[in-house]
Length: 295
Image (cartoon, rainbow, N blue to C red):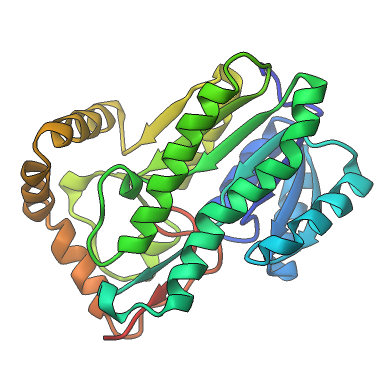
């Protein structure tokens, strides 16, 4: 898909954080952006920014945690815009804490919003894309899905699931004209977890801007990239890929690298932090709602 002009894009988690940056990037491509999130006030602001940048924004307040009602959301979207050309599954949530302190509700919330909702939205809209022989799905995952992150274990599991589901779907869709990509950001500046936690990220771990991630989304659609790792710059991103490759042979070595980079200490401090600020459904290692779990 070389041009997004005139395309209709469904963007979840559009009211805050990374979702806003993605919406702006889509607006510059003159796309119509169907913005979905829980907070109408935030969606209205996002849609105003989209209009100012040359796109068209449509606000639909909806909590995608209600996965059994996503078919109703689809019907509503179809009535307003007709068909959807692109889905960007951006909404997500993470809860820091010791695993033993998670409740079943915590686990269900993370897995539902981060993985099940993305899969169900895609399941609902994909048949139309296949019928029209077009379409692109972009899943916003995380480096935490490539290598488990301590004190954020269920988030890691949800993002690993999103990455592997994308991988499987890419193979299923290989003979079609519908494509799928996954974006794996590392730590992100200016928005979400990195800002809200008030805990500095080790510089060797790499940190990117939300604009970097938004640009990666556009690039993935235009160039049909299967996977893009966003981690500060090309050198850091390639070093990250190499580390993950080494981890396939010696996971304990990468465990030690994470300790050396103070990533384990960083997340422990986040898990134990008092007055940990919460952001809405679009911001954290990348883009979401972040919650603190007291032990």
